[in-house]
View 1 (cartoon, one colour):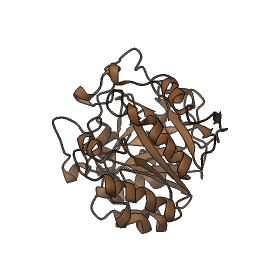
View 2: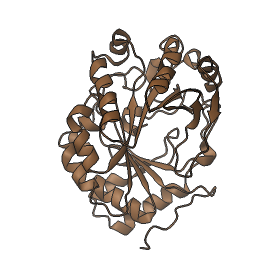
View 3: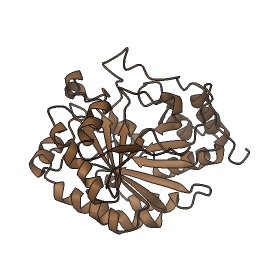
View 4: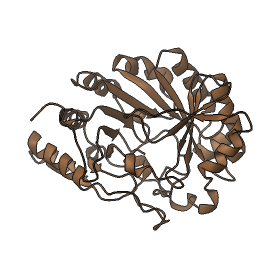
Length: 330
């Protein structure tokens, strides 16, 4: 196997980014993410840490350069320290990121830094403690806020706060969140609400377009686009006049970014997805546990990339995909 070749799909997109869901479980119960009725994979259904590290290592050999750990809540998985130690040993993996709800950052931040996790995305949909409990089911706002402050203080190279904007739920806080970027050196990101396995929580009436969000934020000052690097994600990033941080927009509904998509997703139970919003999957777990060789796994990774669709079809199928966000890993 050649070292770090370029992985390209049928539409000439270079695939260099693997998102890995470590668990379908979470310590919170966000209304747009947690499946209803509540379900839980048995431990034997999850990929073991050894299986996860094997797939990640092979993906890096093929050309993946960036890995993001997701969930559920990745830091909720038992003995996460052991996995992080193994991840740090994978040669050629120099860009490791984490998406978290922030509750456990106080416990694990040093393990993350030691493993080379330099960039954090922290999910937070409200700055109001009572509303936080209504959205997540738990009174953990102060823990999350302390986690954000800790992340900013402990030397992570990038801290982003992700807000899923929902009309009638938290859209009255859009400007308040932008003020965080005024005061702190973080990127405040606004994500359009998507119909992904969220049962009754999805409704087109809750969707707020990026255009409307931008208009509200511009009451604080001018937004100036920042040029994107090749390895950057789908967010379109702006400077906000007078701000220490920046503002990002992820707009899967109003502005498709499929033509620039560079990612694969490995679900917590070992299914490889080439598109978040397509339910087509490749079963890697069966191969891993059936005696498959490294070449077998690599061939399946390449096959999945070759089957990557040109784009999603949420505009044609507004009910969305059936996969549960907590299992897929966002």
